[in-house]
Length: 327
Image (cartoon, rainbow, N blue to C red; front, side, top):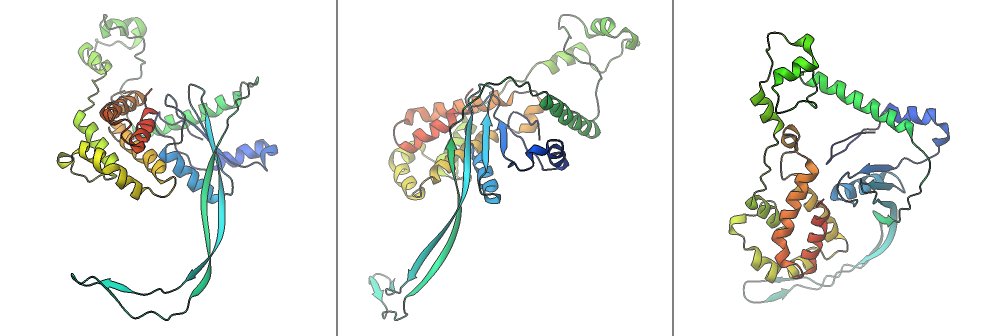
């Protein structure tokens, strides 16, 4: 449904789905599920992927999501919608309140009779699957055709939204030859008075990828925001060593008492901080490799936290999640 970037893919259900089913009528009774690629990253369920599981799992009873990558290490999960009925009895046991320094004051015992009611509850849960890759002789030519259709559609959209600077492909440009000489060889019919949009100096500047600046201060800010569960924390007033060694274990035990809540938080906040470390549009414009940039950010975060490895299980889990972004 979409050929996205190295960090994001999105799609809307449209008429192509119905058209595909109509052309392959044997699929009419099949369920629609999801498969997407993490490209150069490791295959795991990020915070975004877990949210997709919950959203899609709420729309149907069983939803399967398969994640692949370039290494061929795949992972998958399936959801189920669980309905529960619980009988709850409410009984008043008394009322008290604190009054200045005089301790607790108890009011008269409440004589309201106990009330019993049935409470319906519904929630989505998911389970990881074992992925068995079967090797078959299937070139899947129809997928190549589908990819071409998507790329053509995107190219037409980009053409309407942008202005073309120059029609030629710069792949064969050689730095030690002038741009004028190169154009004379490749396209002599278009060389008029040797006037071009870019001179040699400009071309060399365009072909040089700017240095990626992973600021230690920005990395430290990400680490602090992750550990404190707050994007508004004043980093300059925060003592990370004291927090981790004296307060983090007890605070996290209280905050993430419910099973699974810390895992979901760790996946979400790490994905959010690393993905938003740089402006993605700016990186694409400057021809950065986004997987590489994410890997640098993740590696810097791991290096700052490495000294605290083993202090508590939460730090170790954070390091495990961040490590998945290192390629």
